[in-house]
Image (tube, rainbow, N blue to C red; front, side, top):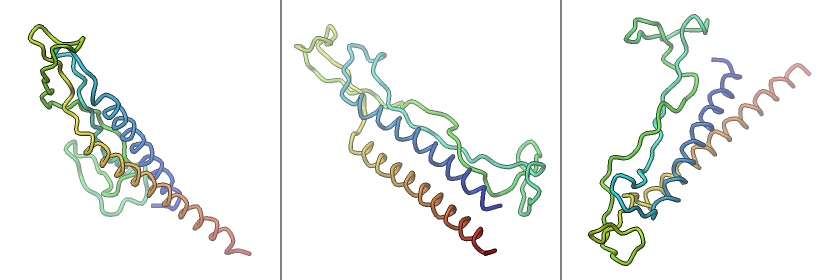
Amino acid sequence: MSLTNIFNISGSGMSAQSVRLNTIASNVANAETASSSINEVYQGRKPFFKIMQTRVNEDPFWQGSVFDDENTLYQQQGRGVMVQAIVESKATPQARYEPDHPKADEKGYVYYPNINVVEEMTDMISASRSFQVNVEIMNTAKTMLQKVLTLGQ
């Protein structure tokens, strides 16, 4: 792996964490959204990440390789991360008895998403710190490249 690959890997990590932060923000913004039907309630979302692997023919330095299910040779090291899917929660919505609410159904219930705001905020802190670590990795790699360029002087 060359030093310049670090920028691609860190950049993909920052992109993935941005998607994570956006889904968390959406969950927090809709945590108290009322609905008159259990089928119309906002469902919390979570992104799932996947390692982007490099095929051997794409990278000449392919030591420590493995085969996947399709018998294609891959490196054990990835070349970044990508968002594989954003999945909706299967949690049962909260039914609250609020007969005076404008969105109450015929039985007087209003439905709210089953989103724990404290968990979402904890996840937001984790995503923010992961983003920050990727920025620091990029800055360190940039400093290292600048030092390499000054070696010949």
